Length: 462
Image (cartoon, rainbow, N blue to C red):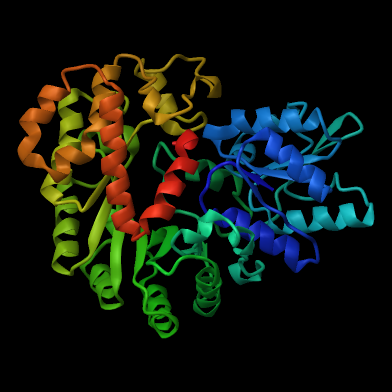
């Protein structure tokens, strides 16, 4: 398995567990240097080479897979969000197989077939090239109960620098919401009639999942990375009651503002929650409602912030800049709502449109994207600025560079506004890196030297 980013991915850990639990060997190579990859392939002589492919990195995936194909006659398989929603990637000459949707049991069947020298072109969830044809197999039903999936195995990260990351637990799969910029609505449509989309491990199994993460990663606050905490408070209460019996580490989780009720926040505080991450996305109620389909008022955000502060829980906010139809005044509303909320760890990105999402269709209708917009138009980095027409790229980029500074130090707003009159430059970018790194390190309680290595390793994938 080849992974470009230096970060722990739950999806890869589950593929590792699937392969190893069925008697196969799973070897993870981290990094995108082709010479190193070729050397590793020569050493281990794998039967198949896999890539977990996210849309922003699909071009890099195809480039490296193509170079591997020029050297080795080994089948390549792509899985993850991009081939799931854009299966036409199978048509690229360097791709032999794609996996759509959840891959654990499809991988087990594929590896068994390779071992036994049996055909594998009829395995559910896989699209396979065979004798000049592409076999497009149907999706298997979603695994339910989720406990049937092999227990997560993070050991593939054990001897890497990633072991210095906080422990991760991914206990809930699926999301019931339909934000226009997200792929969840498309995934639910893809799996229509294939079972319950939103599922969670039992409490007992969840504790085992957490224990596996604690074996490998740095002992810092545990990150619960699922999207839907707060929907089932009875399960959440039972989970963290058992959690306190196995570790005294604090924890961090994601939560929707609508789910951060008084009852929910009180429950999290009682169990020692250190911080939560909230999606503010935009400070403009109009942009949230009309463009993003997130229908909550700013008053709710202020109430949630007050609730979290009262219960001693810090919070991070996710925000987007340069959204379709966003005015300069509305961009400043995003900054202002974070100041009013007294956000502990503000974070922003420049909006990057992804094909096959509702927000792209909205942007086209409003004239912010060309009708022929495709993946070829997606920038390689957020620092490339906005690709939307009718927006001032310099202002959007400067708003990213100084976003966190404006919120943490609101008294120097006038000075920052003066700096933002000038064109974006390397000094502004360096300042952004310094502030971002300081807040991120503080949030995740990482040690300095390993964290510097982490930043350097991922510099090409930011």
